[in-house]
Length: 503
Image 1: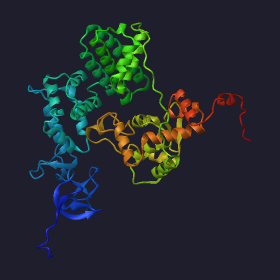
Image 2: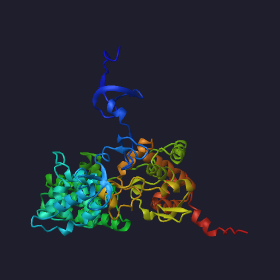
Image 3: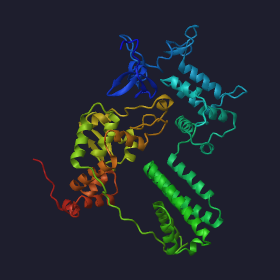
């Protein structure tokens, strides 16, 4: 058929998911005209891999649609050469100055005075290297899914209709805009820093207490939740500097299951002091596995002499239920060390799991002060003792963070403390994000870490593993037993061993 008679088939594009005429097939998948002609490459303006709107020339790089949206000119306000508006009228104003002016108008009261509490945000806005993201954030429209905008909250702070406190923000819907704004306010020093996981546990405790109708039960649950569960979590936070999301989630589950147990007893007109082991067994038989979390509450009630010695039989769990084959583990390690197409952050995270048996919760919270680099040797503190990182891995660690925070988050005071920074100011990359990235590389984090721990436990004493990897000594002993190692006489042999002297 000639080109005039031929009609290209209409299929759904594998790149943009739109129904359009097929221009070509890439690896057997249909691609439309727009996606075929506009390839996705690293943008020379923002550095992100996006669809290129203006192709590179000898004097200019590839530019995405965001960077090519406006011409470049010298700003009449700040004198910087950047993308600007008003070029045709001779009054060029760069996007950074436009964003600062819009924010200044938002935090200015009707009387004409500025809310100086929010003034530090102006400094953050002025230092942003991609101000168009600020304009998008300032001009974003409210939707049914996200009715709470950060701009609206700033206006409410200025007018006084909303208090500038964490507690006031906790009363609003936890939308991504609210999380982003809270991070900016903390990074700018406007709000005090706090651990979000401790705050989420406090909110879970308040919700559990609100569901308790009987005063005696509410008093018991308040004492348990605030002076047992929350107090332990705060001590852990003070000792370690941070807590994991799973710890806060498990603590919240413990409180909620205790509330359900008290409610079940109250339905039978039974006080907690009169509960017997039969009531506990009945409670376990009638629900899901999560009901076993009430054991912490029962042990606390026994120590407080509220109940008799009630208990829940513990389930025996294998310390290494599933492990990766050691050959597969070393194959993954060689790939992470040699494959330069993988992002350096993903390579470091994978190596820390494959070779150093680190959990993802610790990898996500690694900071720049955990790395000691004198230019020749690089040490990283994973436990109580720093570990010498060999040159192939050390070069990858020196390249971190490979994904810096963009916008105002990247210019906050604590923007460079995380080796794996997240999108929100002051926050590291989420654990599940790291897990997903490793999964795309074919790395099952839990199974791979189990294989690494088994080999290390077979080759090193438990005390050495505990110091180097940052695990509890009792856990290190369990791993040594699971690996078949016998280090029971290690301390005695080291004490009586004659030191080796060099000639």
